[in-house]
Image (cartoon, rainbow, N blue to C red; front, side):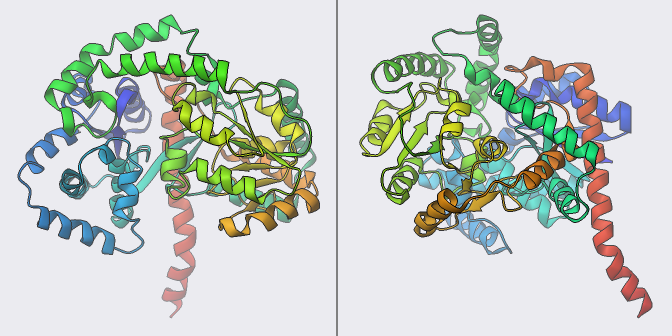
Length: 496
């Protein structure tokens, strides 16, 4: 089996171990795609890969002097393909590419598409493992789908040590959905129900948080010096990337001047301190309320999964107009965004008369328990709201948004009526909630995923082996599902 790993950013410290585990445990041929020349050399030196492909080198050959008319024709051809997302949607979801000029963007995106066309046609991998957190990865997913190549997008669940593999940017977790439907038809066994009940009880007692948020709980005013040391050790790498690839690095911030993060971290500390002192509240207001937590941006969960819902300020204003009379909209900053947003953004939120803005230090469990409804785009607060048996309104796609536990809002014009129904008519369905919990626990892969700098434990041998096993298991499961879909058709053709 041939597997291609898309090695973006800090995954260069993690993916060689995955490649070795796939080769040793499952006999896979593993190649890698890197975004920069220094990352390419680093991956090649590990000896873990059959081949390492360098996107920056390709862009440096293709972009300079490329004809704008030809580039535009190529982009229009991309968009003409069946079910392809708009090229501008991909560009706007990419924090690097969208920073280039209009003309340069028109040159770069076709070159990225050419890179994937050539790579996948020549390599012909059976599967690709990579996130879909930037335009390059989104284009890779699109080309892979057209070539019928499986694409595994790792997606940490709201539950500790549980991982999904999504097959599409806005996709649901299909095995969980099938398990949920089966449990609805047959019911949970007494043991399955007991496990789900214990999980919910433990979640509420411990006020559990998704493990991928653990790094975000710390204040920028109390830095982790061990992590800062690891970050400082990357400065020479960033400097080499900036000098060699500069504006052709489109997968992370490694192509930006290495002194910029130092300035941004300093400003983040200043903004966080100022907002905590002068803007944020820490006491939840009395009276009826609904809860909308701010989402991380830029981020895959918002910019890619829900690209037309990224204006959170406009969404908060729409919620404030839609709640019943006498209701407040409680907005809480995300722990991972401490100091990231300008203070003017918060002041605009505060100017809305029925909105309260809370500090990221306030416990979301407390806010949810005191609220009559939880509203979210794609955030894990939906999961928390479900487990507290609160009505949850989702504007974007949720991996677990099936069943009747989530109110879908596909049009803002419908929000007032959806809110009224959610607040006044919602009746908790504990049986369905337990089915959802059991379905996630039963189908998600038991493995940790994340940034190896922030969470070095994911690089431990036992976890890497679990991840390699999960990748192969997922591919086998998808192959079986596809055969089950095709088999009845083949059978009918044989009979004919």
